[in-house]
Length: 138
Length: 138
DNA sequence: GTCTTATAAGACTAATACAGTCCAATAACA
DNA sequence: TGTTATTGGACTGTATTAGTCTTATAAGAC
Image (tube, each protein chain N blue to C red):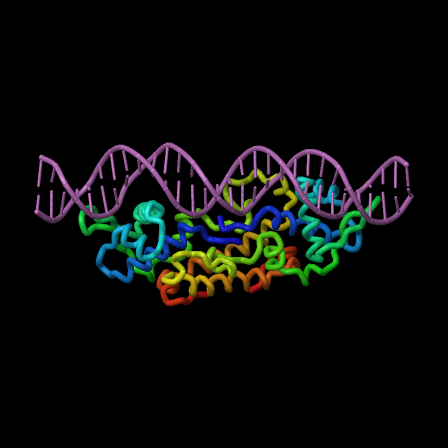
């Protein structure tokens, strides 16, 4: 497993779709049908995307969303953080999570932190443009 | 999130503990108390570890488990796969999972496969010895 | 032989996260 | 004012995770 959730998958697909349309808007319905994503779910996802500034809403007839940032400027880490919070390979790496009873004698926190940073770097250096071109950086 | 589960965390901690004891055995109870891990849960974890050949059981008084492989020989990928199955950043990357309705027009499968491979490589090249020394390879 | 220590294995429960739905409200244009 | 579309909240079902409980089995110590 160790997987990114559906919102992230769908969100990326939707952003790539919007990028194809260049300056035009696409409604949630259009994107949902074109990409086979449940409409109500995509609607939620786009709301979150809006609140993070990835897209801009256009109300009314012929409205929808349009991309406000370029694909080269958006990286996978941002999207992952938006829908799943910070990347933490181990639960105890979370800043607010100091309740692990084994923490004092834990032998793996420190190395896990290093591993975590590697994954963060990998995600951070992968832009949506990279994804669209079927590459990853690093 | 994007996190490794508790069994993996506890399992690694237990293996590192066993390594410290060198050729001696340590019982589940001893490990559980020393590492603050719920005993019944650790018991399950050790059973799985046994079935994968990481440790050997010793029955009876003064029994427990002992390590059968060296820390340099065990990598994080093996442990992750043992307790969480194969690493798949995206759900659709699973071999048996061909039911995604968007698959035909999905724009992210191919790049996600590349990303997935990077993570697999990172885990594979990180041995428990690396973890014990607070490093990761790659 | 039986007592004790320890693993083995299966069923079971509780809590959480995930995926997805439903409905009423609001915004803006024609 | 009707239509198209976003907004936001509550809600449901399912899967995964974490952890517990109980009974059985193995083997050494006395």
